[in-house]
Image (cartoon, rainbow, N blue to C red; front, side, top):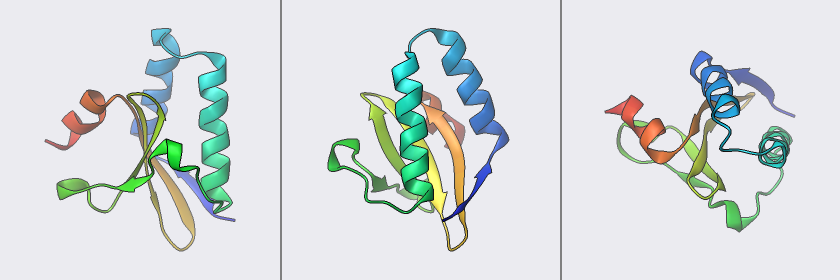
Length: 96
């Protein structure tokens, strides 16, 4: 099982998305399930479109949790690094 590292930006993104009212309790439960599956190195269903990112973000991966709601993370030998959460525009503007 991987240890979880949570970046400051991820904590801010969670707080922003909870406050926004755009996401339900079920959406946040799905987020928890996906994090647990990644932590335990389980296979992720194809419907979540897990993929490697490109360009400045090529060291990271993404999951589409719900439509345009993305989880950006990095898996290495020992850690699951939770980096960002949000819509495409919110996530990618941080890397321009």
